[in-house]
Image (cartoon, rainbow, N blue to C red; front, side):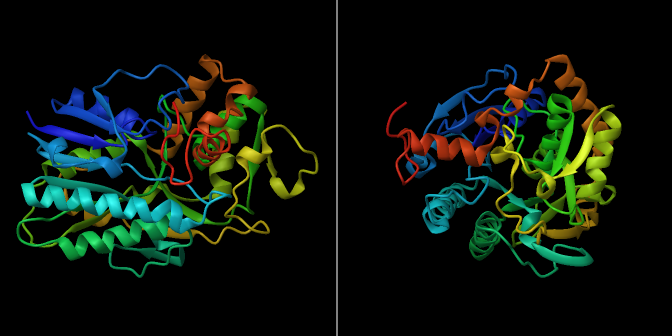
Length: 358
């Protein structure tokens, strides 16, 4: 039985990945600083967790470990009170420090990167060899770490870098700041589907269960190369324009209506949560379509099991059953950026994003 260490184990992905790996006969230990430990829409499965800031991670934490899945990061931007360097430079530093420890011990290192590194990609379908053009501090941070890991790679250390499409799907530590999740939650809770932009931007999507599946393949893959492995993770059938996603959610929730943020003149409760600060004047510069052929060739047998339509149905059925209220949907706990700002504002975190108090 392989022993896997998951950093960021109490986040949106980690809360699904840990039980998924355990169900597939891996011995798992999670490491997490605990920013989102109590941000639960419904009870998570209890998994072995060590509470530690990744900046304090050391060699002793890797005893007996076969693979590290590195999810820990700051997953959204921008924070109003802090410059991006203050937020992302430490993430880059501790990621490479952990990777170096893995390299010195012969431990597989699986890094959760993002297709957002492609940024303003135009209309062509992008492969792993296509130019990158990150549009945010978050996506630039992912690309910088990829480049750092590439420089570390040799015949004895080949990191696996998974460029995930935009995530969607159920997690006990739910995120309503992810577009499909937001549309589904908003439709059930408020009967409105509000678009930040004109909806014309293209984006690829991947269900959280398929992300876990790709990570499992990355842990077990027998690398036959002396360089890092970079793979887009998703499905070509899940490249969508944002407006089409809104229409799919509208069809799944009878009585819901599509509207645009620019057309809303009132100060409705929760608009500050659903507003995307990276969208200016109704235009989202982050538009890209992605090819996922390489992962199917590299990981024989890998296919995405979840369509966007099925994922929407899973979420809307769950939300209706809870039931998801407008108060739930507008809870700051389900919006990573605003949750971090809330912790900062109330003195729980320092400007270095370290705990001041529990």
